[in-house]
Image (cartoon, rainbow, N blue to C red; front, side, top):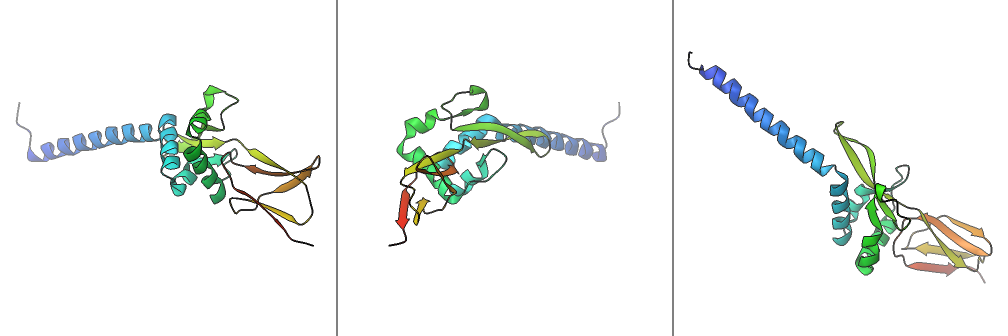
Length: 171
């Protein structure tokens, strides 16, 4: 046997470093993109009132992004009703009627790993007195308003705690 040349030692070292980096990146990306990690990041963003991070994690079915007022409502729900909020979040395979937020697989991260997002169940608010000239706002935002059975139906909206305001413009 002859000793390795300096060139071969460098090549072996580079291949070893690249292998370690690849394995480390693979483990990190797989862990970060997992359903459990997505769920933890969702809880953390809600508890830390981080709308930006929350906005990247949640969506309605079909990939529709939530508005700022809806993100605020989720944060309010987490802050003011922590027990109910915790019971309303879970994995999609839990199949519970109680779940308002479920983790769904939504594509690939880096083209290799399953990516996940929090899917939000659409909710509606019912308000009495469908009077012409009344404008309803939730968390200072206007949402779609329809009328049914003598009531005003506002939505779809994300589940959460909202502040409802109704302004009347007329005589």
